[in-house]
Image 1 (tube, rainbow, N blue to C red):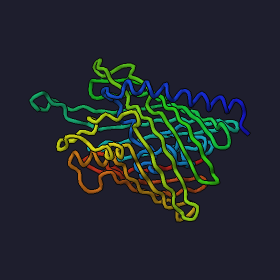
Image 2: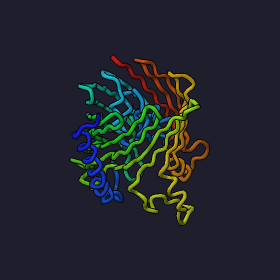
Image 3: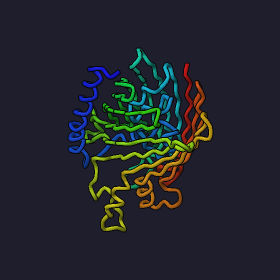
Length: 333
């Protein structure tokens, strides 16, 4: 039964969305830092195109992009993720989710991108030595089940980056809302991601976090073991020059719209197995513009989901130099 508190919570969340969107529009043309926040932590989401805020899944990584989804995760769930990245980089992390009461869920996350060792050179290209680089994000999240169908959530992350002798500290917030009808297997979500600013910037430069307003849905078919996902991403950033290509004077309106869409499909041969594929239009456009050919924008994966143990693997390409493999394991204690 929906309570007065539930109605007030939903109303306040909807009222907050336009205010935070206006804040993001002010910042959308600024220089971005902490782009590591764009990377997925879920192998399943990575297989579905890398952007997904509506997939209902009993996994500790489910709420990293939309904290409202933590409401569907089992109590005392522990998760680990690992992804290879170009030039020897490693994106790795851990999550722990716990429920308290009938409607409350909390989550704790830690992620690190280790770029390894790199050569330090002067303006003439002479090697002076080497340095290391890394990004770290530590945070917590809270999800509240507003009613039988609605859930809301919020997350906060403390971010730290160090590249050689330069360092930066920032704080980031996420807000999410989800509607899920189990009978029709329909999930619809909205999320405001990476709201925040640096507390200490690199070399006193003005920088912004990569704010992302997203809307998405996931729908299972009634008479086939298939589930589709569509995510609309970066909805406050539509400037034409963002899609600049050296060989194009301008980009068509249709391509401009497509570059905000990520699509994915799950094939579910059994209750405990999934096979996934996705296509990220923007990633495909950017990689092709940079010279990449086959497979740009495509991603694939699969996994098993038992009552207590889950595992997943995905393949995707984020950079010209190499493809990335991502692995997840999770266990409900």
